[in-house]
Length: 162
Image 1 (spheres, rainbow, N blue to C red):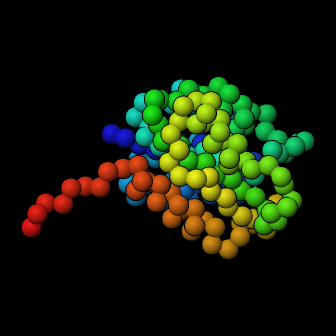
Image 2 (image 1 turned 135 degrees about the horizontal axis):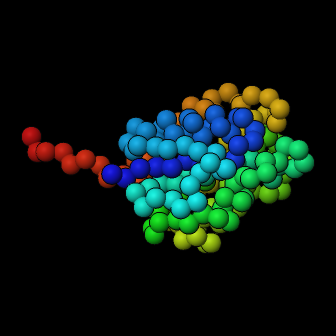
């Protein structure tokens, strides 16, 4: 049976909340496994139909940077042929604060470097204060995005004529 895998950068804690909300949305159509990058499989199983990966909208620096995070996982991972990929990031609500696009960088690594197939454009989630909570409604938006992704990659059940 096809399933989904959500891999996230373990810092900050809000990224875990977004990853879990995405997983809840995916679970409406697919079994889902969720793992932080340091615990994620480096050989993605062949029954994974959708890989969703995400982290901060900018690389963490200094003591906040994990010893083994999403960049290290992306260097080590092997994907099954034709796996669909979707990426997300979490960023402050200040478009000019960071010049990098974390989700796009993750997508480039998964698609160009590892042969994944894009399932949707990268998604950006917002938290107004890097040390504070998520913006209002972001967890619900992540859940809906996960559900939409699941619908994109799973066939609709046939409806018997009636």
